[in-house]
Length: 416
Image (cartoon, rainbow, N blue to C red):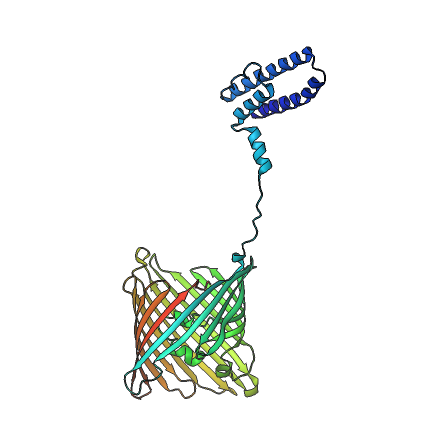
């Protein structure tokens, strides 16, 4: 019925538009009567169509009125709008260009500040305050297929590139590819930036075996996750290590890392993960071969209904370092175990125990580090930490550390 209705309107309009010039040229009474008869027939047909559609027929035009205006009024009543005004509005319509928003092209920029204060139990107090690091992070999508992350570290008067890499996700085989400089996935905590670890410093085994700032390399990384009795992650990296001098004797040759992590959900409130890492590099000039192996575990309890107020985590790593020259060299062991417990929404209590055998002479260092962290908000946290350290059989040393960390801008977590 709707098509018939519109066809009638079009036919009537066209007919009147064609007939009007003829009537103007030959204004005979016979032609006028014929047009009026045809108009009445069209009006009657229009009324029947409107009645079938359940709409009220338009009121008849007043005697002597303009028949064309009456027909247009009837059409406007049928479609619910004034066709003349609609035509005028369409002719006056303005089209505004929606140019690309330039702000969308800008990267996400975040800045993190990390300030420390120290006090020792005995001796002269010096260097008590340390502007440990200011980190500037840039993150952005390069195109629909790749992203980039760049982190610039300012430590005192030294500015350096902490990380800078591009990565591609959704590649064939569900592989992620990273290219650039990045913190390597040795164990769990080495991947974290220093201001994000549970204590003020990396575990002693990581800094003793992998370098003062942990293991950082420039190269490529391949990552793949797969299922089957839990979730498993496999990562392979080929890099030039930033710890080349300490670990590999400044050989400048590629180093190779493989990391396997296994994840199991134990229930609604708990999960466990166990992983292993292998690192290998050589320096043919000095006949040096370096191997570092690691085992890691983590157990976390986080009740879904109380996740903001209660969480308990137990984690640990064991590392073995072997540096052989001409096939001869000792194996050193080190590791840590730590636990954190969320007391409420703001406060987290933790403690860590470190054990490490020095790479060169095997001197054993032990330390215990209890801490209390207050998360003022997502952007600010404060921490108080006590450290009791004993090197071999020497007298134990005591240190109190206070830390303040804040961030502005986005500071997204790494995704794997």
